[in-house]
Image (cartoon, rainbow, N blue to C red; front, top):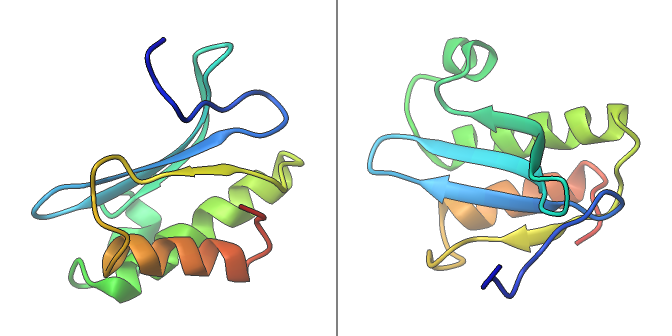
Length: 104
């Protein structure tokens, strides 16, 4: 692998992808190449609660992902924003995940 940021079973990688319309977040175990949990603005739970892709939607995604990770016993993660700037929706998602109890 040629990545600088890698996650494993105990400390998975939280990867955030933002397109023009939607935002996606996944907890990834890079050693086993498995997705442990995921949430996005197109999932039914988030889509019915929110009307648009704003920072509020990103906060809901971060909170949902933190709840899923807590159920699996994951408290510590590595944050991977890709090449996107830590601003706006990416920042809102990260801060809501931190507020829900994930440690970066």
